[in-house]
Each structure stands twice: as structure tokens, then as C-alpha cells.
Image (tube, rainbow, N blue to C red; front, side, top):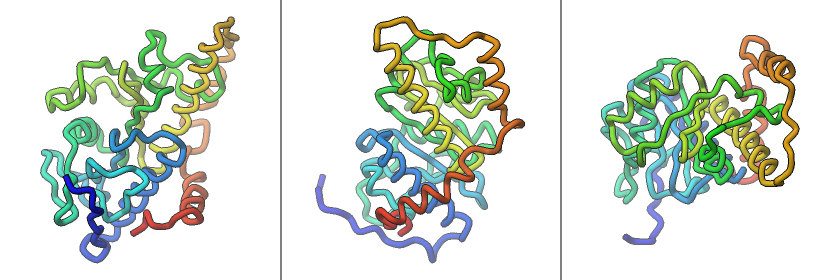
Length: 260
């Protein structure tokens, strides 16, 4: 395969304003994922449903680093796996596992507008523990009791796995793919990214604490229950909405090229 860079053709004039905004937010999420150390070369994926075409979603072209992704480089894919929009002459196409995982989520729940999947070292470490995520830190209690688990059955390339993924996620917005990695969903790209950022830090803290080979300070059950309740969506602001404009400002200061 050629190592030459294929120029990205701007798409803004050929798609709806709603889809373009979704593309900008999604491209930002890829850049932020890379910035905060949650990317994995060209692997893993983040997606967003097309707001005015809910039977379609946006996904990264397999072969691009997260730091390269722009609003125009993203694929538009339907729920049957047909690529509707892509860059002409690009050598990069649809990744089977990306399609299986993300189409499963959008098929199952109309409220999901974005999804994020990672293979971070901390996420994979916690996914390999029988205990899963423990309520060892304040951050972990944000997710504790509201997290789902999905058993590993091999790489997620079989469309037949979609129903099981959806069933295991249920009504939750966070799932640990056992022996695999992490998954978050949300009503926006901002919410899905924020959930992943928090989940990743909770996993990092647990992995580091357990690696110290000393007795862990487990929180009393009543304190865990109180903290979990205080993080209930009905008791606290929606995470991601306040943080997202600040994160976009950060990206714009560093390199606004994701908006192209």
C-alpha cells in the first residue's frame, strides 16, 4: 500500500448542517482521545449518529491515526454496513469490528447519539479482572452499579454478536468488554467522551492501587451507596455539556485542523 498522503476533500457543502456539526464534534473526540492517551494506533473507534438521518452513523476510516482525523475524513455508514459517504480514492474503508459494535448500539437504542470504544492499558487490565471496576475512588462510584459487562467471544467482527452486545449494555451508558476494553455511549459526542474520560481514570486508579501490593482501603458500603446516589443522573448535571466547549477551545488553540 502506498504511504503517500491522500488529500482530504472538504465535504461541508455537500451534506446537511446537522451532519456537518456532528462530524466536527466527532473529529474533535478523536483528537481529544489521542491527546489524552486513549488511542491505539489505527484501532478502536468512535462514532456519532447522523442527527437528521438516524439510520446512518459516522465512523472513522480504518487506517487513519486519530490525530489525522478531520470532519471531512469520516465515513457515513448505514445500519446494514453500506458506506454512503467516503473520501474519493481513499485506501481506507470500513472496519468490520467498528461496524458490528456501533451498528449494534444504534439499532438497539434510539437515545444513543454517540459511542466510544477504547483499548487502553488500564481499560484492558480492569476488563481482565474478575471483579471488574470496584468502588475504590470517588470517580469509580460515578459508574458503579450503572456499568454493564460483555463477555469476550473473539474479535467483534461477527454481525451475529450485535444482539448480545445490545442486550448486555441494556439501559446503561457504560460497558466493560471483558478481556477486551471499554465502551461508553451518550446522547451526544460530548457525553460519550466525558464518560470515557472518567471511566478511563477510574480504571487507571484501580490498576495502580492494586499494583501497589498492599491492603486496599475499601469504602464502607453506606458511603459507596451515598456516593453512587449522588452521581445519579437525576441528582447531578449532565456531564460533558459544560466541559465540551472548553475542550474545543483547547483543540482550537493547538490545531483547529480537525474542523476541516
